[in-house]
Length: 254
Image (cartoon, rainbow, N blue to C red; front, side, top):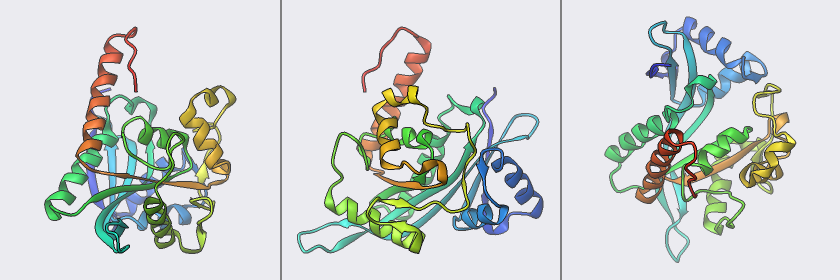
């Protein structure tokens, strides 16, 4: 497949025809009402669409919001420092898009824009997921992220996640589990089921244990600092995957 056409739109400016097209595409992957889908998308600022060349057929979507927030506590007095949050969601891709590292490329562009506007302010990635595939995107790319099976979440980051969850989900936020409790929206059966054969993977096993209600729409909240070391990890693992794909017998250590 040729590299797709990537376009970014203001959600507030979406035309009725584009809303129809995006809903038709999203409903192939998600269950729930159009009203619930639109409410979720309207909670973000930007919609990213990916289109097949040259047909312009819609083959992927994602949504992004960027806003200032009080980050993890920054000093001994417990005063939270200001940060910029890049919040993503409503992600759905056709399988043929794997291999283009599109999420990483789009995310890096969004990060650069935030960094230019706020050169000295920390930037964090935040999203929620009822799909192990989205959780693996975090685990397979970043060196530092939470929550994770092999390292306890620091107390200041736990507090940060809790405040993000309360701000974003209000009464739907479950502070004891770090989850947004399921509503109308959920994945269709077969899109990202955690089958027994997948549980050999420790990351998938952890996701399923932390979010056993994923099939009912429960969403695990995850965060990662978008700092130099994490972007270095992203691009290092990108090149490792390229080498691995070019040489099937090459084993890449995490």
